[in-house]
Length: 77
Image (tube, rainbow, N blue to C red; front, side, top):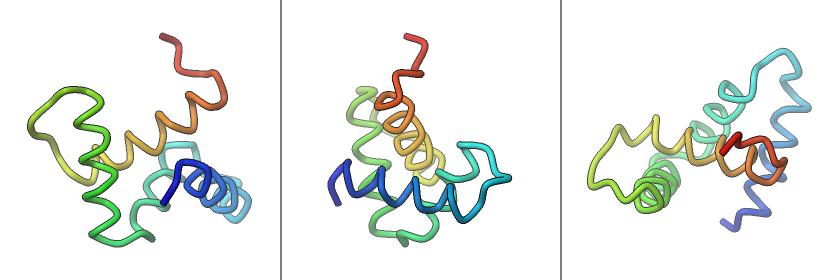
């Protein structure tokens, strides 16, 4: 899945769940993707952070959230 496809999925999930905050939406996207995609997203995020280990689900959610915020220009870095 490309980052563009992930952003579209995030946006559609946000439209379906307008009352949720961004992290909750990212969690829904990760849950819907299944275990294999969760591990792939977590691996990408941990590689970007140059870490060897971390909670897979939390790392996957953080990757989705950070990618969306980066594209919006809201990272605060």
